[in-house]
Amino acid sequence: MLQAASLFNQLLHHFPRNEFAALVKKHGAERSAKGFTCWTQFVSMLFCQLGRADSLREICNGLSCCLGKLVHLGIAKAPRRSTLSYANEHRPAALFEDLFWTSLARFRDSGTLGQRKHKFRFKNKLLSLDSTTITLCLNLFPWAKFRRAKGGVKAHVLLDHDDYLPAYVLLTEARRSDVKMADSFLPNPGSIVAMDRGYNDYALFGRWTKAGVFFVTRLKDDAQFEIVEERTRPQNSAICVDQIIRLSSAKGRAGCPHLLRRVVVWVPEKDDVIVLLTNHLEFGATTIAAIYKDRWKLELFFKAIKQNLTVKTFVGTSENALRIQIWTALIALLLLKWLHHLSRANWSLSNLASLLRLNLFTYRELTKWLNDPLETPPLPPPPQQLTLALC
Image 1 (cartoon, rainbow, N blue to C red):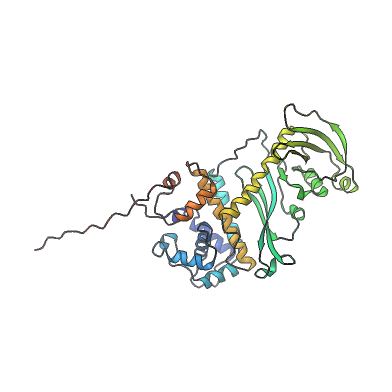
Image 2 (image 1 turned 180 degrees about the vertical axis):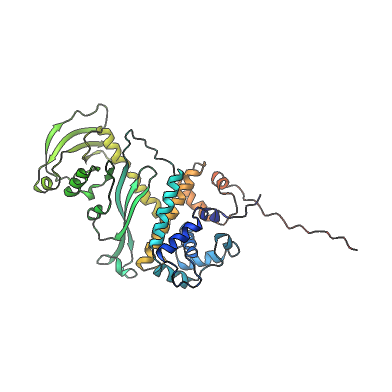
């Protein structure tokens, strides 16, 4: 039977209108609005992401081509470019930020985002901390000056390894230092945070250790330390050295006077070793190495956003418009992750995003399309001419 709703419409059902209206009221986003609703703005920007539209013209023309189908999306007509541009510039981006976190919490509570593939024996919350830079044209985005002839913004992300989706996101100018922004994240005691060498800060290590937060990172090449204990390394493993150390430099002793652990791991792919630093003294050395290796999932998260969504070209040049586009990109990624977990077909996230873009307004049942996306969609029944008896 032909479905009465498009795939896009079925995806929008996962954003309850009463919940959305409560967020709009909370932020006063429709104050002095004249007909153009925040819901229409959200549908337009989500179409920008899922349909890979690179400009306001593509968004508005793409929706205009579907006139007649838009009523199923909760909008009467496609927006004008000037109207959408004005809304993105002036309506609070915090509305879409709250929408992302509210929706993410709902999906997590329903258990429909899957679980991490690499199972660890410990029950601690595993997180990864890193940032990615989005390059901007300085002439179009003068407020985002990064270098002499380059602009940019940074997305600082704390990734939850339970479902490989963010636990915290912070958007800043690209010139902001990663290590200085680390204090913006407040992991719960007992959490384990994996991060790269750019977050080496002895004072940060000291504060986290005192608060009961564990970390796994790379040790700087010029770090000064003294060996307190040599531990027996496991046999038939990539662990070369396992030591308990104490930082011996003046800055190290002042910032982090606690005992730390130095683990040297052989990496066959690079034909080299990496030196890990952690404040967790109980786990096995192979577990410490596996935790740092799983940090790569954050790099895959950044790759998924940049390859499958519209975050390299922006439909507005103001800071508010840019933030709205990034938050709607995260909302779109949340939907893609949910669909990828729901599907029984063995396909990649990139293929899913590409086929969804081509079938947004296809009238098929969502789960059937996920399991067999290449099946020919059903045709609408032909109109039947009634035969009337003539008197």
